[in-house]
Image 1 (cartoon, rainbow, N blue to C red):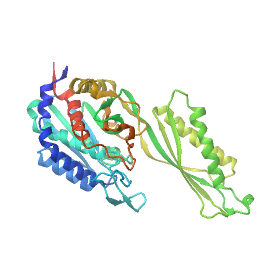
Image 2 (tube, one colour; image 1 turned 90 degrees about the vertical axis):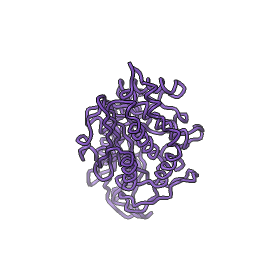
Image 3 (tube, helix red, strand yellow; image 1 turned 90 degrees about the horizontal axis):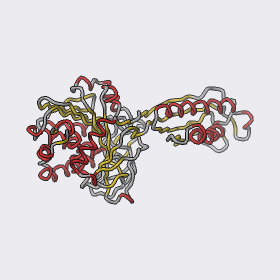
Image 4 (cartoon, rainbow, N blue to C red; image 1 turned 135 degrees about the vertical axis):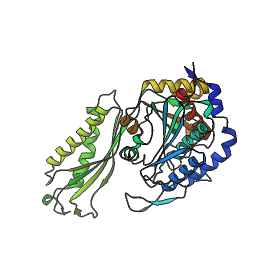
Length: 413
C-alpha cells in the first residue's frame, strides 16, 4: 500500500489559510518558554487550542497532555512533541526572541529560558497535525494520538508520563512517531535512518574524599585536586584503549569543583562526567570503566573514604525500528519527492522519546527536519543562537507529521 495523495492533500488543505495564525502562535511559544516540569502556561495554551478545535485532551501529571482523535476503524498512530525550554539566554537576533526568566529548580536561582532546542516547532508540528486531522475526518480512518511531553531536557518527562498512567489515557498505538528540528540537515529536508539514531547518555556526579591540610603541609593531607586531575587524564584512555575502534563513545568531564583558597588543600572535590554511546553494552562498559578507574585512583591516593557516584539525566538509546522507519521514508519520498528526503546521520545528542513506546511495547521511528537555509552557518541545537528559519520549517514540520501518519491512516491499495 501507499499513501493516498488525495487524502493527504485534503488533510493539509488548510495549510495556506492557517499559515498566518500558526506563525503568530509559534512566536507566542517561542517568546514564552518554560523550564522542565514547569511548563504550566505552555500546557494551558496547548490545551486551549485543542479544546477550541473540538479535540479530546487529558492531562497527564502536572503539564503533560494526551489528545485523542478517534475516527472509525483503523490503526492507532501516536506522535510525540516535547514542550520544555532550556536555561539558556537566547541570542538569535530574532525580533521574537525570548526574554523570559524562571526559577531553575536545580539551582534555586532565576535563569533565562529559551527554546534553543526547537521544541516550540515540535509543539506547533503536532498541534497543527491534530487540528488538520480533526478538520478533515472524511479523508482518513483510524485513531490519531498526540502526546505533549514535558521535561525532555532533564530526562524526566517521558518517565513521569509513564508513572502517571499515560497507557490508561490512550489506546495502545500501533506505531509511535517523533520529529526533531536540526541544524545538520538542509532547510526543509526530512532525514530518516533505521537503527541507532540518537545516543544513550548519562551524567555522573562524583564526590572525591581527600583530607584537608595547609598548603604548606601537603604531606599531612590527601589532596583531592591532584587526585581529580589524575582521574581526568586517566579517563581519556577509556575510549582510546578500551572501546573498539568501530564503536562510538564519548566521555566528557564537564566540571571540576574543589577548594576556595590557594594555600588550603580542600577535603573534597567534585567531578561532573557525561557519557554517550550508540550501544547499550558500550554505555555499560563506559560506566564500569569510569567507576573502576576512579576507585583505583582513590585507593592509590590513600583516600579516607570511598568515592560517591550519583547518576542523573539518563537517556536511553533511540533505536529506530525498521518497519515503521521504512514506511515513513517511503511516504516522505512518495509525497515530497526524493529531493526533500535524505539519510540522517547518527546524532550524538540524546532523547527520552523511546521511554514511552518501549514501556508500551510499541515500534517507533524518529526523524529529523532541517531548520536552516544557510546550513553552513547554522548554530547547533542548544546554542544561544539556535532559532530555525520560521519558514519553510513551520509548514514542512506540519506536513511531515501528517504524511508520516498517513502511512497508516490514509493509504490506498
